[in-house]
Length: 219
Image (cartoon, rainbow, N blue to C red; front, side):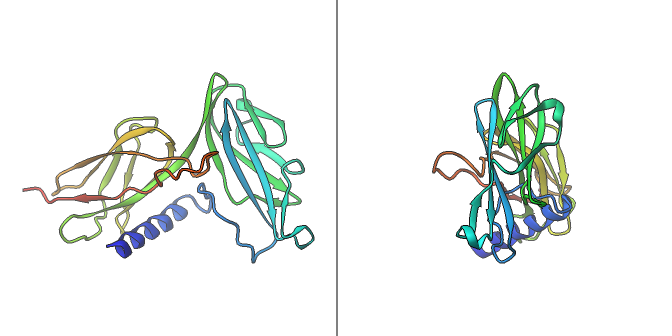
């Protein structure tokens, strides 16, 4: 069963990458065999967002170099705020923003998305993916609909692909919400879940951005 779930999550991840056309939201360790590479990590710091940029594959610096103060920082929507200093974004109005960095022509491999507000703590926007399958046969169910019923992404819908995989791109981390999976001929199933930020100041490991559904055939 564990191997089956791992395979489904891998298929869901492939579906996510294809759907976002190479724009990866989930943070990952750079491939140090392809030097140099830039990795950016961002976390909420009150209303602000604090980011660090690390360059990998630099032999003269022990292969790792902090280039936060040297990188060029960008916000996808400048009207939402600006970087008051390298790596420190200050919002001026509420909205969704993507934060990226560039150093010596090297782009970071991770796009960090946040919901920012000058009056509230910044919150990370992450993804959620998974599979929908038949509870008895364990067969992947294509054409099933997964709908967000509550929370920030309320009303968003995703139709499963040929592998039974679905995905959402803008899930507010730390928020408990409900989702419903349905398909003609099956009883709908509603689950409650919470996606936690992949990067935090604490050591606790939260809920990953994967959630599977098993549907029963309708009587």
